Every structure is written in structure tokens, then in C-alpha cells.
Image (cartoon, rainbow, N blue to C red):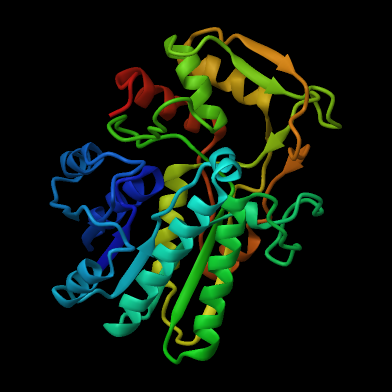
Length: 335
């Protein structure tokens, strides 16, 4: 199978490309490298001993994108490309709406023109509202509270409308919870650039000495240790979910969305403790007031993905911390 992977040089995309190549798929990667590095693709080839065909293209460049589709016969597209920092999206909402939605519309137009109807979309648990009952199911109310989440929700609506009004489309959205970890080789991993937005890479950079201490926002939540709890899923389990979903795109005229999480929850302090075990280092942290918009608890009900895709996460929080530390310790400044 020949597949197009947008954003394939990024964190989740690169790990998924490894698994696609390992099982024998031909992979073409498109990435504008605005928040990723081509070095990840070199290391993918090192890990797999297989070639990755790469084009540095912005999906909004419709002419170049159409030329790419004309020169290949894609069976499916995995769409990871997009801006993804929640805080930045609040500061630059128009930038996020313009980039994420326009690039997705451009991709859909090229797919439609060239008869490629199978799509996996990289969505997010941020599409859900802040006050939903736990665990979060696919039927939970959707109400994104930041521009990043809104772009995911809007794109999902566009995809659902596409399937409803055009014959032959098969589209699946995978709603990730909190990705962590790295490839077991330590050669590819999360490389946020600058100050990390996500908790685990921040902890990892404190462990390397690049950052001074972790800020823990809120220790008075109604949780087992007072800190917020989240559903942290290993990036390789996420990659496996994409392969399972890709194998399940066989029925035309269907749009489906799946929660991709573990169904378990881990607190901030528990994650710090697990990383201390992985690194053998003490992770200093500072307790601070809650941040506006943060919820106490968020974790997935992943049973639909298990039932319909035959997929479930099996790697542990410790696996995530161990592989993250292997990556970070070997690459303290990223790629």
C-alpha cells in the first residue's frame, strides 16, 4: 500500500511512519518543517533500513500538492500536519484557524480531484467540553475551549459533512489523549523546540538541566494527591492505533471517530515520580495556583477502539518515561 503521511516528520507522524515501513507499506511524507525536523526522517531510515520519500511542501500550496497526487497512486492519507500548541493558539487564533483549516481543505480538495477517498485524521481529546463525565466516551459532549481544539472540532465537522454528501469516502478521526514516550531505539522522540508546552518533555528537560524546575499548577484538586490527572498514552501505542484504523478503512461512506487513550489516569506527581525512576535523577518542582481552564481529571473510555479496531494500549507510564529519558538523554537539545 502506498500512503501519504502529512506532518510525517513530526512527533506522532514520525513514529507512525516507522511502523508503516516495518510492515511493508510505501510511505511518502509531506511536511513544511515549521515545527519539525527533517533529521527525524533520516533517523527513520536508519531504524527501518527503508527509504522515506519526502517533500518539503506546505499543504496550502495547492499546485504543488496536486502535482504530488498526479505522480503517485495513494491508497490512503494519514493527516498529522498542523499547528498544535494550545497556549500559542490562544495568543494567535487567526494563525491557527488559517493554517489548520485551510491546509485540511486543500488536502481534501486534492484527494477529491485525484480519487483518493481514504483518510485518517489526527484529532484530539481537546474537542470535548471541560465538564464531561469521566471516562470520556465518543458520545461525550464536544465543546472545545481553545482555538487549537476548535480547529480539530471544525475539521472533524468538515470531514463528517464530506462523507455525508460525497460517495465513496472513508474517514476516521483518532482523538488522542496525552501522548508521551519515544521509540525504543531512542533515535526519534518528541522535540518541541524552545520551552515545551507538554508536561513530560518539560520534566525531561529539567532532568537534563536545560530547565530549572517543573511548575505544578494546582495541588488542591479533588484527586488522590491534589494534582491534576490525565490519560498518558505511549506514542508507539498511538502509532499502532493508526495501523489498526488504516486496516479498518474498508467500508465506503462511513465517518468514525475513536478515543485513543489507555483508560487509566496518572497524576502530575505520579508522572514526576515515574520519571525520577527512569532517569535516576531528582526532579525539582514548584507548586503553583491552578491555571484557568484546567480540569481536575481527564481520561478516555477507549472501549470503542478495542471493539471495532481490535486495538488497545498496552505500554505503561513507566515505559513512556523510560523511552522518553532514553531519547532526551541521547539528544538533550533535540534533533
